[in-house]
Image (cartoon, rainbow, N blue to C red):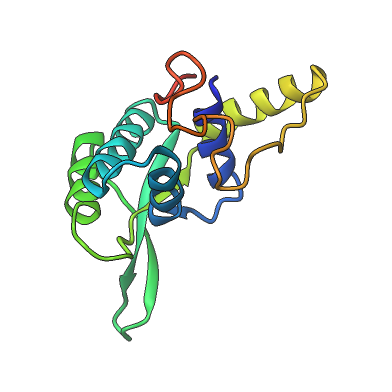
Length: 151
């Protein structure tokens, strides 16, 4: 598992879901990419994660009383990805698309976390939304295939 995949799985490991805005802003800052390029990059990660069943998708939707209610998205991977694409490509600062944990993803994350601990590596190092350790100061990927989902 590469560093990017580990950090994204760590971010959803608490079971609360992570709004893609929480990934978008620090990634755009780190890479220096324009908004459209960052959105395309994040959607690529979401696509790979959903297709491999290591992450799910969800959102907050208004209930009958007008208050937000959690909704796990159902349907095929392609249907969920089209829905995420439509929401995430809109302008604004809140896209209300959440990456969520899946049993397979959490199993892979737990195994990698244990492997790191056994190797004497701090499993929580750099897991802080800064995405440090993935890109260098110029926005270049540090490890081979480091900007892809690799399990």
